[in-house]
Amino acid sequence: MTSPVALRDLPSVDRLLRAPGAEAMANAFGRPLATEALRVTLDETRRRLREGSSDETIPPDHDLVSEARDWLEELLAPTLRPVINATGVIIHTNLGRAPLSDDAIAAVAAVAAGYSTLEYDTATGRRGSRAVHVESLLTRLTGAEAALVVNNNAAAVLLMLSVLGRDREVIISRGQLVEIGGGFRIPDVMAQSGARLVEVGTTNRTRLRDYAEAITPDTAAILIAHHSNYKIVGFAEEPEPAELAALARERGLRLLFDQGSGALRDVGPFGLTPETTVLDGLRAGCDVVAFSGDKLLGGPQAGILVGRGALIDLLKRHPLARAVRADKMALAALAATLTQYLTGRADDIPIWRMIARPLDDIAATAEAWAARLRDAGIAATTAPSESWVGGGSLPGESLPTRVVVVDPGPAGADALAARLRAAPTPVIGRIHDGRLLLDPRTVLPGEDLVGSVIGGR
Ligand SMILES: *Cc1c(COP(=O)(O)O)cnc(C)c1O
Image 1: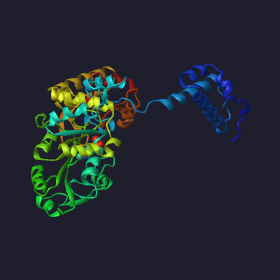
Image 2 (image 1 turned 60 degrees about the vertical axis):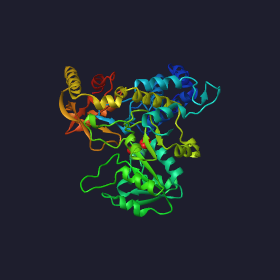
Image 3 (image 1 turned 135 degrees about the horizontal axis):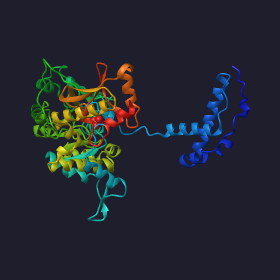
Image 4 (image 1 turned 180 degrees about the vertical axis):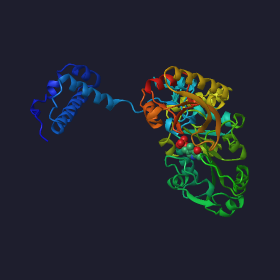
């Protein structure tokens, strides 16, 4: 297609750099990026003119500059940013898992801004160990002899198996060959660690005898992997950790437990089916227990290993431990969170506040929000529904809640959900039966859900 517009009349990058707004853009984004943005804009304009209809004209210079600025703003807009979680899934893996407590946030801010005692002992003026900041808190909380913190639980399991199972056999039930999500599969981690996987039993039933019969002179350990994100119901059986511990002791093996969720307290009192906590695992006789810092523990991303002193020492000295070590911000947040457990203030940790939040309180919030939405001309009601703990913990377990139900109008729920995701602070809800559900349980105090919905509709 030919254009009547003379492409040679397009301004040069140099001329645009002197146009109104260009200097402000160069100051804000730096000259190299500003120049690149102008070049991209000119290329795009040239393409439009070549392909476009005959009434296309060359835009004024200041329009080209502002187009370049839009391109830069989009290029540099942070992709990692806050959202309002109105899904009702408390430990939402895609939305960053556990929100930190105020204490944990303050501890992170304190060490992030300056220097710290990360590996410095102020008493001696010498090099210290980063392990000390959380080890005593963890041993006191769990009663374990020793503890070690690494980057995440996948790394903790990899380290545990690399050190205690390499070139030997590790026995695991076929009912526990789990995939946690994001491609973390127990069999793959075992292969990576150099441990040889020995599967016993069947998907639904594994007996103590199955483990006993699989033991050879090459066996190093028995691994229990927590069913974090699925349940085997019906005709199902697995030996208790204490039975496996007795077998392991008798045959000189280690019993390793990938507990996963980091449950340090019993969830029973919150109306959820109790699961094997970290303490249960240790009490039953597991030699090492591995778990996450940011699931039911409610702290930062971290992998925590607790257990026998001699074994934790071996893990600490392995080169992989250095490769997967925790950073100062995670250690600060974890220490603060663990202190909340130790001092009887675990209820202040956001995930526990959400889990414990009474239904009538949630319902009152839902009613108030629905009323404000109606005042703004948005058709909203409330309805009973369910929230989930999530995060690959407590599968199938839900908590009764009351949600705001937004009628999306003729455009439909998908379109409304997309608009709310595009809000300056995206609101993530749940679609059910063609309507958008917003669960107050997972919305944090101080988050302006109603304002974001009204702004984003
Ligand atoms: C979540 C989980 C993992 C992985 O932990 P990350 O902290 O995500 O690395 C491993 N094993 C089990 C049983 C889990 O639940």
